[in-house]
Image (tube, rainbow over all chains, first blue to last red; front, side, top):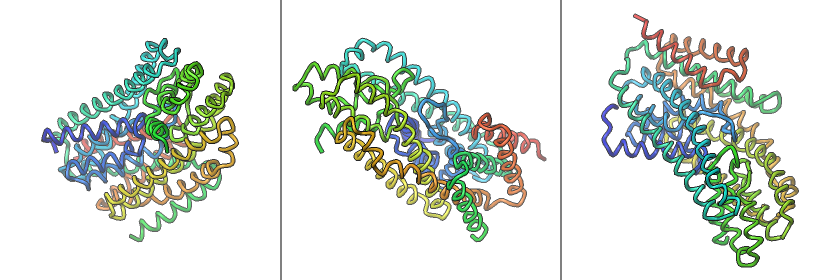
Length: 225
Length: 245
């Protein structure tokens, strides 16, 4: 889908910005998860099926990540939204793997941009040191609102760049049955990422036992259906 | 619920709005505390000024449980507990609230919700699944936020005991077990759904990549992240596919 209308581009930018903000600042309501971000992008594009395929694949990678405090983690939302644009309007079996590669690269860039915004906030705190030391509610509110505005700009910028890249790449996407193997490799890598993360998080206790039970039932269900 | 309580609750939704390495969520906590400290402004202006300074100092916890600390610290200000003691309480709450929230939500409820969402999508319920999961997750998140702020305001400096006697530690212990089950269920179903229309060659490529990924994780540990492995594996597959006749 290379030719997005102005309205669709604007809606995708707004949605991508919200998913980017959701990761850390506001509202932390699960919107930043790739499955939710991609489903929303699919609705906006009128291609829900592609949105869900891209979302499920990217979610396998994101299941490995715990967005804990000061640690560095990828920001999937904006790139996931743009990845749906890249994968839609063509044979998803051939484009899904390439879309995942695109989204993972942007997730890394998103992670770097989070570090940048934290440093920007730090500089803002230093500039407002006198007001904060005096406990001035006006200063506290100003710093808080500027922090939120900074993350909005970060997320919006990241989404806009990602969408422009996706639009530019879409017409030159390689096609053909052999690119289905790229999708297959992406699925294998995603399952490895999710399984590795799940095993690591499970340790050796009850969680590991239930993980094994769940995987066994899931395998049986996958074979039978 | 008073207007101050509701405003504080709303502001807690963006408690990490100005997250930084110096004060972490401190400024967000100060911003959320302001509506709750308004009554202190008229009753004891000097104490209010001190409380405002303390409210924006360094703090970090899981964002959904920050209300426990916020309520407790505000209540302690109204109880006229010495400032140094309030600062110690603030510092003491940081690690437990972070650890409990991470275990309950990030490592428990979120993977469970995503596992459920994947299963629903794979089963063909599409957007309905997404809507139901979002409603359930955010319902739980809001209920937890209301409970946290209320409990903090009710218990003040005794918030540690209130947390210990509450549902929170038990739920944090159990959430991971449930997450293990649902993530385990979702993984094979997701892989099957994504590979379904493809042939045996694709399944073979996926299995080889899966084994390589698990091997890399076992050999390299945290040095190879999911994203890094994904970029390498998919990038190599793309180069190879390009080279195929």
